[in-house]
Image 1 (cartoon, helix red, strand yellow):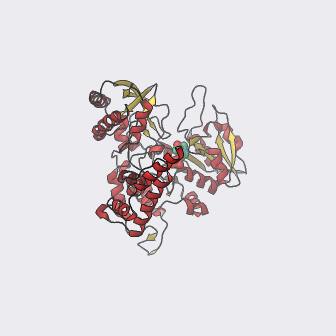
Image 2: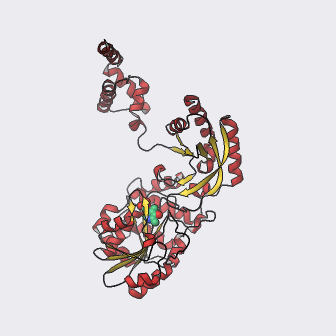
Image 3: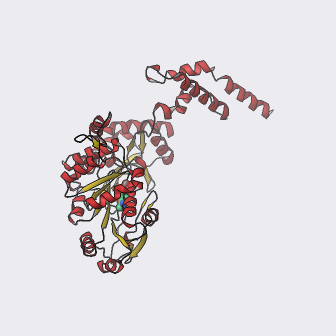
Length: 452
Ligand SMILES: *Cc1c(COP(=O)(O)O)cnc(C)c1O
């Protein structure tokens, strides 16, 4: 009897699948101007009908069909509203981009470009020419190269300078950034031998000095981006390390991490800047372009021309170099930031706390009795300023089904990312752009009516 019933239900579900031409017609209407290649339409029609046949409980409908085709109708990552209070979040694509900068950059390289052509001589030129010419205008550096991210830059630099030799690093700076960037592992990958010196909390220049010998390839310093060692501590300042490097003829590489520029004017940023690092004259300086610098994912290396030429000669360079669009965006972003213009992240970080309070209060009055204002903290994140929680306010939901509500908000259109901490679902407006407040209210009210 049970079998028979199940068979009938299955038949009923199948019977509701329209014939393939009708399904194609429905799918065609999802595309702008109803424009879609016939072969693809057929494939999609079969994909959706087979999905319904193979999944118990699935029923064919235009809505189900649209949901199944979402990766094609809205390809790639989808936009989110970030109400976590963490400004740079790897899971959310790190720095929000300045659309006008990206558009300018795209307009210049969408067609053919002189990426690797020296227009003056009509000979082949290196694609790094563009970023190097810009870097020389912005900073006192001889040369520059751009690769896919800072991890790649570190690996490339160590491979070029210290393969089969030693890289000397303080035990207090053997960083793990997350997403499998662990300095000792990167060193193994680069083929260099890690020579740890000092202790976790104290390393002195004498420790480095004692380690330098004929097997030394480079002296390496990393900014401990996402942690701080406090208390009984000593860290070797970059200028002492570069002085030792010059005395011993060993290159000094500094991994700055976040790419904080003094031109960004973030409030009371306890973060070493590109400019301060360059003043200590490391042979190579490395930083990410999609953290505080606010651009797309890339790793910039600035420094001595002879060493950067050595990096360029590595076979690895062919795998790690960036494409013309990334290169163009990074160039435009650097020009933008160094002119002192705001980025989305700097605008968020520089919001007036009183204004934030007003926005939170306005939103709170729209959301109903389950919501109230609570003290909350804001972080820059993305491996920057770990110790710098900034006090602020969040809208807190203390009603039923917090997790369900958070899930529903995240899956919304657009998705809204809240956090659940201290037993409360929180919306922190410090990472929400003011023009998104109205959307946030609508999304929350809609999700609440669905879930609660
Ligand atoms: C973030 C960070 C990295 C890794 O940068 P990616 O661009 O994500 O590869 C490396 N070193 C430090 C010190 C960092 O903060």
